[in-house]
Length: 368
Image (cartoon, rainbow, N blue to C red; front, side, top):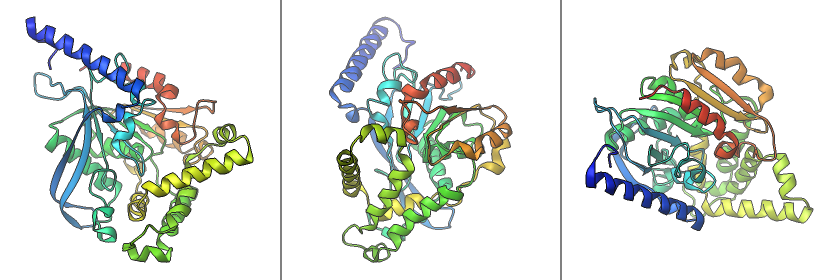
């Protein structure tokens, strides 16, 4: 609905926006934010993966909030795409701690002003994935495939021909870097959180290989044709917990032996209920050839890259960001110090910690 409408239409717009804001606030208070947004699916026909494999119908699920606005030439100027991490979904961003801090009235990405697009990546959520039926016969997708699918979703289904910013957390962070050099003119800015524009090697790769081996080496996996989830998922989830947790937080949250035992038991039980072995295997395998480092000179959009000092996945002592960011023409790197508010790798989803940096970045972007 356009702000330019006058008279009764303008009054209607004002009332509608007021009601929307009230409903949004109430949804936060009631914990019902997960019901917000418009969900949909787009089917990309004969999608060809980098491996050469073809999926006749690739389903791409998404959630949107707000309304796209076009300039006089028909270019969308207010679209923001936010990309989730490994094993996640776009709707995870509808939590009170994320959406409540970014999408609400007067917030940085107020959906009365911005058109927010939250895709489910290939192999995740409501998009096509191995557990739909193909199991280990599903195409062995890569991050490049996932980014190309996102671009198809934006242009073919949503009619979005330009993005104000691409944001991403963890895997989505890596996707944001790929967007920067694959579609350099498509976005005004990039905000990658909790990753590095470098190949996944060293301990990061070792952890991922162990996760995949925990699944593949379980006799119950049966080449992907299991009838019940193999126990290897539990072992893989144990490693995932160590990758993404933070010592300071866990020490505070589990101050006794009993509390620590109870906390990790509950975490693993919860993961077992929602994790499919094939999906998890494919999700971690997709990072195998990720490496933006040779392409950083092609990233022309301004970049705000944010990592946290307590992130086990991206430990600051490696010095990767300090070495590579000078190759980004308009890049800024922020290393968040360890505080009582940071959550290790999971700090990427806490706008209360890094929102001030995002606010500064948005102010520096050229007006459209």
